[in-house]
Amino acid sequence: MKHLSSFFLFLSLFNLTFYGSTAQNLIQTTCKSCSKNESSITYGFCTSSLQAAPASQCATLRGLGMISIRLIRYNATDTRCHVKMLLKDKNLDLYNRSRLKVCLDLYSDAIPTIKLAMKSYNTKKYYDANIQISATIATATTCEDGFKEKEGAVSPLTKRNDNTFQLSAMALSLMNLVMNNNG
Image 1 (cartoon, helix red, strand yellow):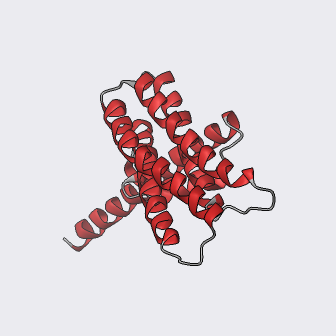
Image 2: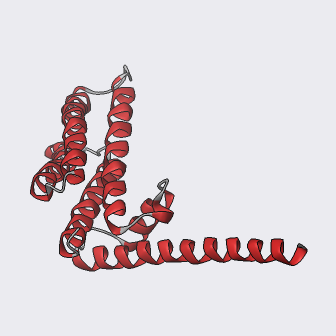
C-alpha cells in the first residue's frame, strides 16, 4: 500500500512537471514566433506577461490569445485609473492636463472596444477582433503622440502606453497564429 501511494505521488508530480513544462514551452514558442514576426514585441515582455496571467500554464494557443486580450483590458483599465489620479494633481500645468484628458477619453473608449474584441475572438470573428484590437494600438499611440506636440514635454504615460501597444501587438500576432492553426 505504501508503494502504491508513492507511485501515485510520483505520477502526480510527473504530470505537473510534464504539463507545466508543456505550457511553458507553448508560451516560449509562441513568444519567439510573435517577437520574430512583429518587431514591436519583445520576447521578454511577451513571456513575462503571459506567464504572470492566471490559467496561462494550462492554456492552449487559442487560450493564450484570449489571455492576451484580457491583459490589454486590465492594462487599459489600470491606465485609465492612473490618468484619473494624475488629473487630481492641482499643480498640473494646462498643457499636460489637456493631454491627460485626451488620454482619459481614449482609454475610456478603448475599454468597451476591448470587451467587444473578447466577444469577437470567442465567436471566432477574428477580422472584427483584429479591427477592435488595432483601435487599442491607436489609443496608445495617439495618447503618447499628444505629449510630443510641445517641445520638451514628457509623457507621464510612456511606459503604460508602450505596454498597451505591446500587449495589443501580441494579441494580434497570437490571433494570427491561431487563425493559421485553424483555430
